[in-house]
Image (cartoon, helix red, strand yellow):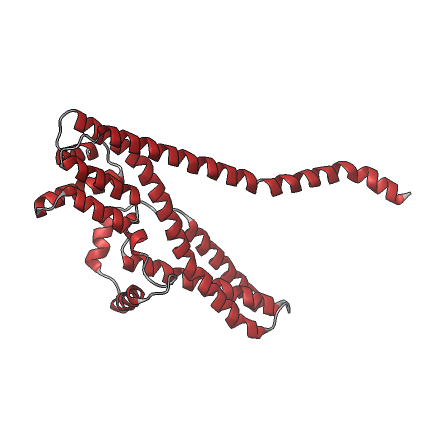
Length: 287
């Protein structure tokens, strides 16, 4: 029994340590090490499993199973890496669920038949965690893109006021920073020029693919500018609208966080009053 308790404790500790490591932010890519791993290759069995699951997820229509292509695209993550993260999360969750179920069974808190159910529940929760993390990170990236688009629109308006044509204005405004959105806009405009496409059509496709409607609006304004319309005022107006929307979102988020603090502060005040009144109450009760 002692040996079993020790083994279960070690398994539980390893699960907690793995969960802590999984929650840490990802380290920056070290190019030489990545090239070395690529040169060595990966396990053919693991690669085949990930590829098969990726293909099935791409064909699935269930929102929790199918590939979130827009979120993966905006975060510049490959589908195979996303599936690998979900597999690791499911394995880690199953290990933690099994350890908790075994501990509960040893302590007579639950029957041993619930151990497989605990492992299954842990696997499901662990497999869903990367999905929710990806969705939240993608939403944060979209919010960041909206903030940058407000600045980008002002830069495009300045380029247009200086006499630049629509295409050079879009490209030169994107060269003002190395923000991921401006880098993608720059690459999209250059690729459209090589392929003989109009840059606003390419930007419209990019905004649709990333689910950033504000970028689609930028493409529509650029399309209008290509017809000879003076759109500097429209660009500044759109930029001001984006800033106002961002400020409204920040205010709403601050209000939501303040509301979430209501219950903890109330409990803290009750606990503080209990500590202050405890000596008097205890003295009255003992009399």
